[in-house]
Image (cartoon, rainbow, N blue to C red):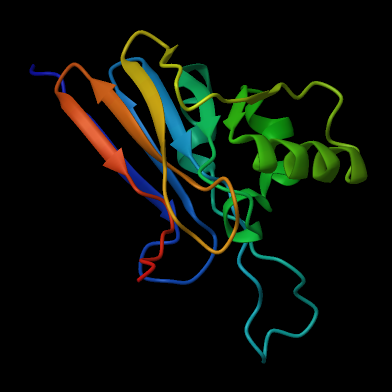
Length: 166
């Protein structure tokens, strides 16, 4: 059987919020972003909506890291709820790193969490399959990044959120 790269949207596709995507190649999974969605007007009693991670929980031994593009809630807000279950390292731009660290402490989810600030000039080997580098993008929050993920089958570019300034 030929190896496949699977790109699995777990939230944020065709909707606003709840951004989370998994890339799976053989025995490695990396996750991009881990955000919340805010409830719509008629959703009484609902504070936050988080992505369904049952696919990841069924493959927990393959999950290598969560890669963060920027510090908006729809990209980091689910970390206090999901990170204690996945127990994997997080890699984030410096501003997002600070926001995540504070959020995990506030929710008392920081005890076993490893959140690494990234340097966009450094390439990270994550698992056997993924070579990860970050690049700057323009967005409404400072320190926003896109992510280039090298795999044995080619490179996946994930821009994250961006805006075009004129």
